[in-house]
Image (tube, rainbow, N blue to C red; front, side):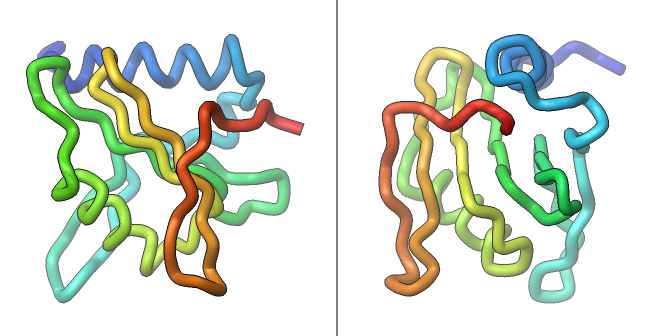
Length: 117
């Protein structure tokens, strides 16, 4: 595997989830495939909770890529199918954390995500 800038961000973010937020390795999946509008897509990082439900989706971009509304639209489309509680977008330099509000069909920006319980 080639260590692209995006892959570098993903590997470092996985380390952050494990070392800083104490998520078990066994609850983290990389490049999990899903089908949206008959097209194959993949999540960069998908974190499950202890019950096996989708808890966090992380979308990683290369450090040179500016995070835009399109990036949030991409992860939001994934979450229409996955129904994760948290969405994270990162380029390794900027990190955006969101908690889903399924009743209002929107997300609320946070300063951080919770540690694993």
